[in-house]
Amino acid sequence: MVKYAGLPSDLPDPPTPRPHLGDPPGEGAGSASRMRLASIADDSDGESPFQEARTMDISLRTTDFGVSPSTQPSRRDRAMLLRMDGVGAGQVVSVEQLPFSLGRHATNRLPIDDDSISRFHARFVCEDGEYYVEDLGSRNGTFIQGKRVTRSVIKDDDWVQLGARVAFRFTLTDARQEGLLRKLYESSTRDALTGAYNRRHFDDRLRAEIAFAVRHATDLGLILLDLDHFKKVNDTYGHPAGDEVLRHLGTIATRMLRTEDVFARFGGEEFAVILRGASTRGASRLAERLRDALRDNHAVHEGTQIPMTLSAGCAALSCCGAPTPEEMVAAADRRLYAAKQGGRNRVVASD
Image (cartoon, rainbow, N blue to C red; front, side):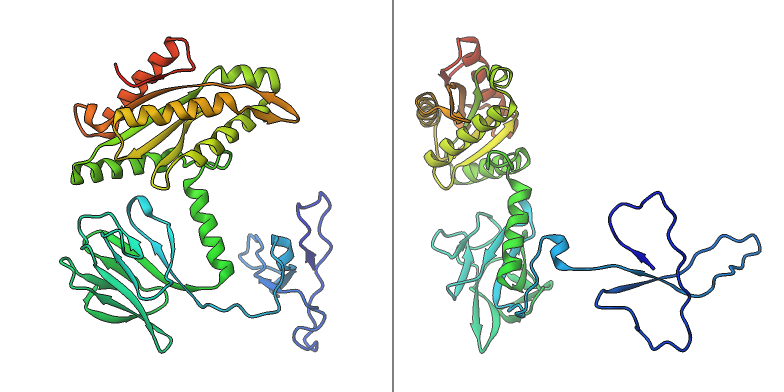
């Protein structure tokens, strides 16, 4: 019998005892789970002298995977929506404070910015322990499992679609699984070191925010930030100190930005901020506040203060020739380069 114990040793496995026909089933198996493996032999005659089944004894303790065993059965009493489309794919939404409404209007429990759905599109209600979806007279309809409905019960793992594009999976789960789903979403959209959004999420959000700005005839601001002489920090204090500086900037930015702003790690020591409704002037004012905050509040690593400054380039949709992500990023990047060439520790908001 082979015991699973990590990497295989250089020694051959001990011979596997053959089962006796008279032994009762499962005798000597203990409490560990057993996996039946078919014996495979390579014989030139096509027949193997070992025809009986062999067993491998594998301990499947939950503590081996960092999970504590639970004596209490889990209660799947939490209704959740998992976003399945677009920039929000993977987002986890709790269906709470019923009735739970969805639509474009900001007063909905879940506001959704998509022009294919109505201002007040649909809602979830719970009656006698069952969940229902009710369409609120939407223009493009509400669908469950591909069928258009006005009111219908919704079951665990059903798909619900609003309009032409917005889709969710409805699920009933427990607190532990909800936490896991949220962690998975965070890990797919966030930079692990700084807590900022990652580059992929930034690209998706910038496209979505430009579409929103064009649709609502509003402006959109963009800041590109770069830490000055960051390589010197790594060379002088070491890479762990450099990591602490990056985390420090992430903390400062998170405290100063609005909920709807998007702070992302653009690459290396370069960061980006998307500012809904902001002009170039508004983006420049925020960049100056960020620059001042970093200059006046030093990062600390192992008791050593590390002074840092940043340079920034600002742009807005209104100053771009075409409403595209490429135009906005190019404009902000030109101005960031000008700030670097002009001596660093400054903000440039015009060509």
